Length: 402
Image (cartoon, rainbow, N blue to C red; front, side):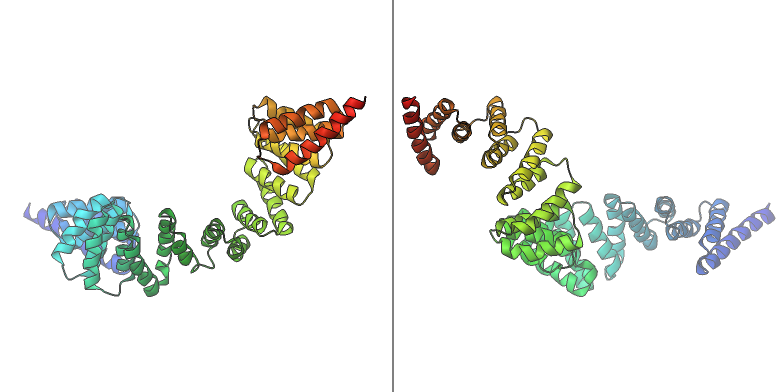
């Protein structure tokens, strides 16, 4: 019996040794089999479970690794390496709340070690414990003042607590220390947007000339701030890098605002071609065409929009206007009938009806609608009211002569 036990122990030690050799040679598959055998031969051998967990980690199997690390800690409570590695595995498994206690213990055991302090802070931040994470990152920075990761984490912790101005220098320092952390500034830009601080957001986005999304946001903010001319270079860059419908429309809107309709037209057309069932795009392109005085093409866009939202009055309103200007009076009256059926008739529509009937020489109907317009307008449309009064007077005289 003693000989059998000795043989088993010798066999276990051999598996451990072979497993370590395989690990050193980066032969992880062979190491895994050796450590499995070692753990099976002596389930109470915490070292075998630790090495088995480590091998699973190296193979990317964090779920299996975490189970073995827990077994190791059950056998050897407080083992620093197991506490640290288990926390890392749980972080990789997107389970920061469970990782935090193990990383806290690792950091407690090695108070002068930077890595456990940083990982513990990250676990707190990812768990939504921003205030605690802030303190932990600040502590990590005392151990390594030049850590970009710790600066980034401290800035993000402040950001999540709504302290944007305090977060900014830390996020900027992180980006200066390591360009890989520059994206953290984009989150700050978004936070400034949400906080209704567009100038600060614009200043952030200016630092990302190669990022199409940042340029699009900067252009949109400049345009919304009444600076469409300043927005155009950023939006042109965004379209060049990422010609999405949203980017094209944003640039087209800036061109429209700066009276550059010829430049807006192809962008709007491309956006509609990419999304033909987009009501808002149809309406936008129709208005661009309307302002270019391409009334027939504009009418086609408004008619297409009316089919996308049958309950919407806006397409029929625009359609009535462009058809009237284009001299297509019967079609314009049909559009006005749709507005009436939708309950969306306004004083301006009486004026359009008056014009249409007037041009069709249906004078009684024209006079009736001019009068309705004058009764309901009440100074809202002074130029049209002047025209309606003049035409109404002339029509009355003509009808009286008949």
